[in-house]
Image (cartoon, rainbow, N blue to C red; front, side, top):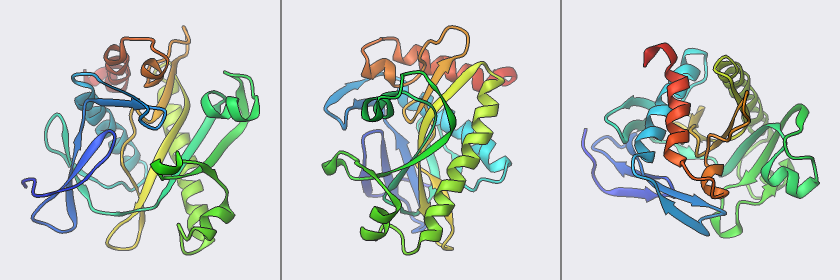
Length: 239
């Protein structure tokens, strides 16, 4: 299946039409952005690493009952995916306080939360992706009923349970992550976009070293090396 017209280009991926109206090709880019693209950069090979990491994690989730948009991975940077209507809500799941949570609420950075926190953010770059509540979601007609918000929350928690246990076995602390969902041609809500160090925070459980996009945000360097380490741990015995 070949790429046709470019449907959409985001910060980290391009989406291409194919000869099947229900199937797209997602191309992972080497671009790095932070603070709503106010900071920009590039790391050669980053796109391929994220493509591989997301492929492995989506396969793990599929195996455990989480439906995703991924059909197959075509090559280093490209995936064949189901076309979905993206729900304009970013679902953020937090296990440990850091980043915007600490800044907004003054919660100590690195504090393990007493329960898993799920937050909704409006997917809108022009508004800087503001945090929103359930009533905002209904007011903005992001979903047509509240039951869908419950589905998003429960899916976020399910993904967290599966990935948190998986990464603990690999000595990585899944601090927090952002996921996006879409509605497929059958009307089902499925996991879309990607799961990678671009959208997750990973801290080494022994050293506390950050192995995610915070290395770019905070000018820590060795972004590609960090992503390679995450992939190495995911693959484990496969590598």
